[in-house]
Image 1 (tube, helix red, strand yellow):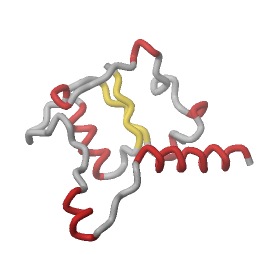
Image 2: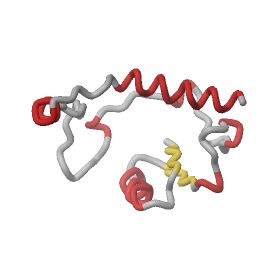
Image 3: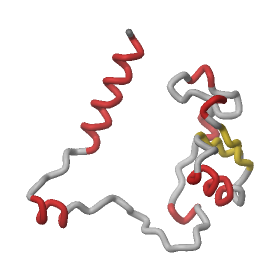
Length: 106
């Protein structure tokens, strides 16, 4: 399996390279090599084919610490302590994508 890894020059990217190497070939990409906002700039190895896309679970990653199968952030304590209700993340993603698409059309 080939694993594209953008942001390979940072500390997180380095650690991911080490961890993911057990799962397959890691293709580490730095910002000068790839612009994720322009799919045509992606190397051929990064452009997925439908057969190359598969869902993965927490159990698929060999990590030294136990990881929860469902790691969504619970916000109950935040809501109680500060009397705030976080916005729905779906709406936030839609808003950001809308802004990005608008900027791309300029």
